[in-house]
Length: 474
Image (cartoon, rainbow, N blue to C red; front, side, top):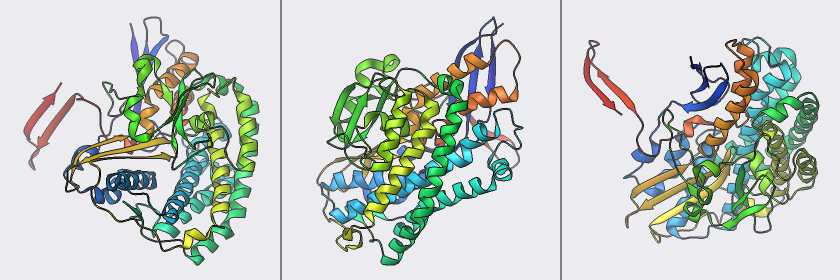
């Protein structure tokens, strides 16, 4: 008879989720699904608040991605006010986003994913983690921790604290970069560059010994989406949307983020609170697209900085057109760290970062505002509709992890079909399936809702333990 294997929880990711693997009567994998089982509801409970409050509220969606929500929310506010923010404010926001990319990618690579391919897929679960990595290679683990700390230092220098900084606001930012802060960042850059080069060299050796993983871990044709500059250069906090296919051909380009609904459809699945966006012109089945580091490196024409451009050329040697293996998300993250360091170094020479012309002031000039920015995990959209007083009537968030949802389902099914045979199920085998999810570095706290209704069983329990009310929604 058919069986279902459940991996619950999925470990070494941000948030709570599980994986279901479905076997047919012969014991072969017929399908697999990734379920996000935590519900947040940010979109709904933000209704009725002022749009100006949103940059202070939405960073609380996640402790890993607060900067991403802060910046996208502030950009949505800019659009509602219909202002062009001062150049200094834009450059300062960009600097903070670069720090966010560094800290988040370092966490993903060194803490969450590296224990698998550095310690071994079959290593005992109790040591296959960051503590096992510390025991095995303390220098490397410490360097990874320091690299993440560098990114967090940039966020703190600008925003006053590492997590949930209330710094970007509709119309600009609250404060400039101090001379002391710039000196701190500048002094740390050589160490950050050295660690990144060590990690790049290490992962290139991993690729030599992990050809099977490169071929099997989410290696399939799909579309890719990300923001690019007008000339196609890699973007992280501006530009317009570009879609490419697995051959590397551009199928849609220079789409204003406010027009995302013309190319992105939203759907939901039973058993998950995570939406499943898709490329609207092709429909849900054929419109699977990926976002994040792998996608950004596929859709851009160049990185725009020399060292990262050299790595990009090597990265693209792993594909025929687009690079389609999700295992190479890890390589793409390291290249984005390198690019971020180069852009940070370039930014520190700009006198605008110390300017006090930081905010544009205006009232409600548009009843809808869309802010889009590249979060570490992919393109993030904040879409706000307000009344004439600036009160939010509707909020729609499209997060990166949701946009990767259909691709993650396909990835875990692909890995499961190769490694699960018959009824024998081992822990290392299940870990390989989990790693398919880690490739995408999902952030599940950002799974704010499902589109439509999801089956729900709610019980209100009194202090004596009795059920006061029992509600079931099918």
